[in-house]
Image 1 (cartoon, helix red, strand yellow):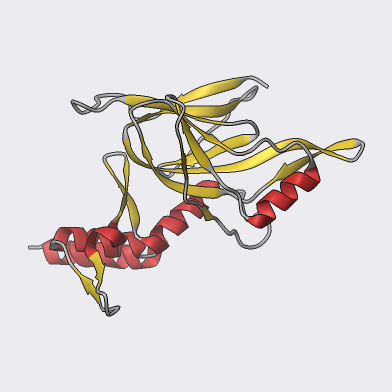
Image 2: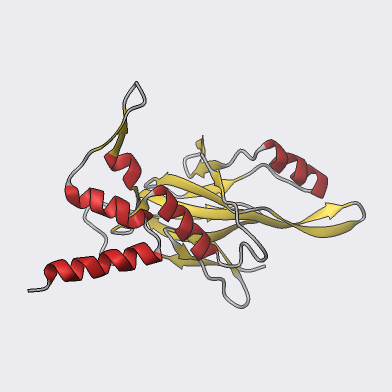
Length: 213
């Protein structure tokens, strides 16, 4: 099947930042990058994307036709989310080669070892989160599923980059004591990112009231 390239955020790059191509290996599909769904064309799928160097959020899944005895069947996993630092060089998200249904099922049951393979030949492990959908057609709205994950974990996007606001403003001492740090503006963004639609609407209404003469 033909593949195509998606370009995000390449206009007006800040000085000193470079774009790199992030690709996926065999049977690995790009789903959502930095909160935005990656659309496939009618005749092909996107398996690479141009990204500026820096921290990005990438969601993929394994989706391939594998041997199952004398037949071939499609095997699709749940989506996997990565918070990764995209380097200046091109890189590819890879898994070991999986050729049979039994092999793939056993591998993902054990826990997949996702890796980022860099253009210079080096590799590094990718920490991942396996996203859990609920109900019928749980993964039909991938953008919404990722948005809910980000809301629950205080993740937002600043100028195209993934920012974990909890890591930015929440500190935990050696004794397990939690404290909120950072300036008021960052704290406001943290709580706003964690609010649901009704809470955001109520807050926005409150802000309007405070601004009224």
